[in-house]
Length: 181
Image (cartoon, rainbow, N blue to C red; front, side, top):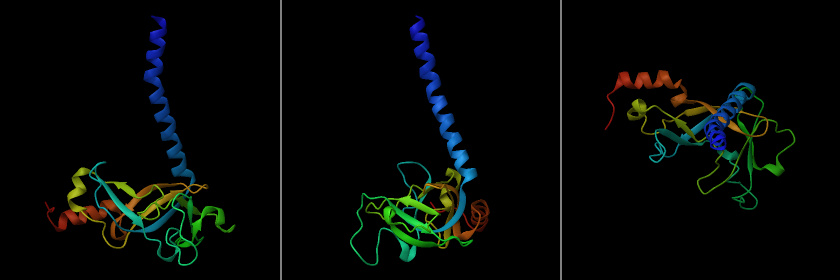
């Protein structure tokens, strides 16, 4: 009887401990990383399988690590890096295979190149169900704010439709029009 009681406690507490540690890791990354605002372009506005998320692609221009302007085709399984310059706007300055990353590249985002383009795990942002009627597509001139850790990982902190704070933008949209069906 005692053995089953211990197993029950382990089964109940283990998920809680793991979730707590994961939350602490994300909280620490959000506090200790570097905040960067990057432009995004519309992709698939809602992922119907996983709830109310707005889905987008990073707009990297000529520095897209998945679309080289010269040289061989990109290995779709290799880890790619997108380097950002040290200016206050943190614009993309280089893109390519991480093993070829310039030594001056201290601020970067790691990702891969599946068929949909550069993917770094920052391509979705949760929107409340009550706001989904006003955000059917990603508006032009939108951006995201991500926190980059020192090893190329990123955590999305904010989605900025048309370059505005999300809450301000959505309230303006609600005041301007009724939701579309």
